[in-house]
Image 1 (cartoon, one colour):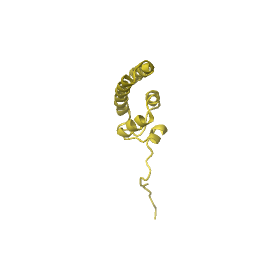
Image 2 (cartoon, helix red, strand yellow):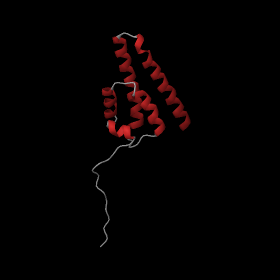
Image 3 (cartoon, rainbow, N blue to C red):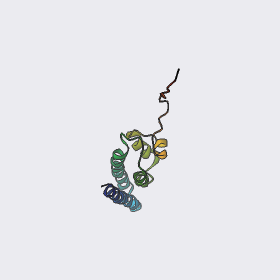
Length: 108
């Protein structure tokens, strides 16, 4: 099951990447429609991977990285924010939880 998931995501990622590579032959209005469509697909994939997660499996992160690098920075940040991640956390691969109280046991 895991292998099938990775293979399916790989081909889906490659298909979206191919769509973005065809942008040069399009008019600006067609490019905008394509960018919006691809952003929606990337958001769907990112939501499945990132929501309610504190860490991203390396193989899935590589696939998502391939898509995010083809989008503009403001779209990437918006997608990550909608999934509850900061850009720094995503780059790190896990959410850094700062300020959580540490439970310290003391002996008397």
